[in-house]
Length: 355
Image 1 (cartoon, one colour):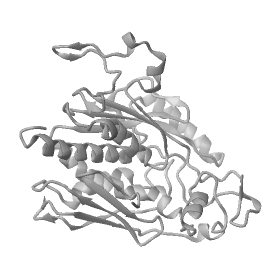
Image 2 (image 1 turned 135 degrees about the vertical axis):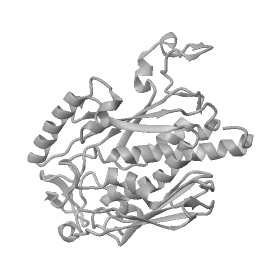
Image 3 (image 1 turned 30 degrees about the vertical axis):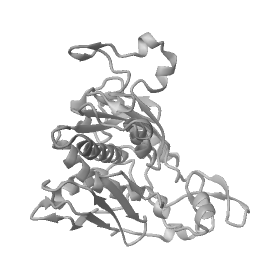
Image 4 (image 1 turned 180 degrees about the vertical axis):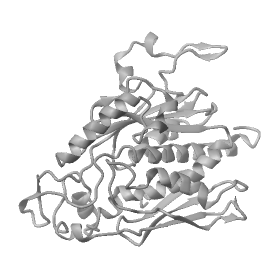
């Protein structure tokens, strides 16, 4: 097992490196007769593309996707869909002086230990650039779940220790940080500027909500949908923690506080985050992910080289100050891929009359 694929029936495999010729994905198990063109995928890729925000890398990648297989006359055929996004603005010069140095916070050391070889140009396979393939595949997954009335929405809940105090979904697209609180977004922008000027980076929290998800998705024991969602989101390099529903706050509640009372009209609260016993209950799925600060910073850091010699490194080149907001479509993509897979699995279980 290579660990480059996710899903059981709706299965996604990504490939490619940060400074290689291209990146891409193969989506297998997509149902036929779904409208799909390159422009559908391009819309999602535009949300993740670098160079659009002051916190983002100035790398100018157009991220143009090509569909190589799996569609005919604008519809999916049920066969594997192959996607490719070519790297157009690669500049590896800044990495030559780092080829023998393990950068703190990166996968340099662990990749060298595992494989005995690593691509030092931009982090290779471990780079955040890999997520472009996830977003491309996620665009297809979104088409699958949208047919069932399911919508995935993510937004910036916290950045650099500044939290959104009010949540207004209509405000998300009114600022470049995709924050539902305009005043908080302004403070976040100031914090980002300070971090950039100081040669540092910032972490944050992304909230993800799933609306319109029917009950019944998820498998017993090891393929619980919350387990699969957590795995999918934790597979994103920047994510260091996942909470669903009340999350860690549930540990501070009593049973009478945490349980969601059930009425003929539905649940009166949603501490479970839309999932009970690993199966969706029809309520809104609520997820939060903690994203670490970008590891590539200009501030000098202590490290070693491949020979074990102590040294100091300052990372130059083209880097984000924060993964936010570019990580938001990546989170949406991973959640959509999991939901699409479980939708297909549920159809197999109960037949087309079911979900």
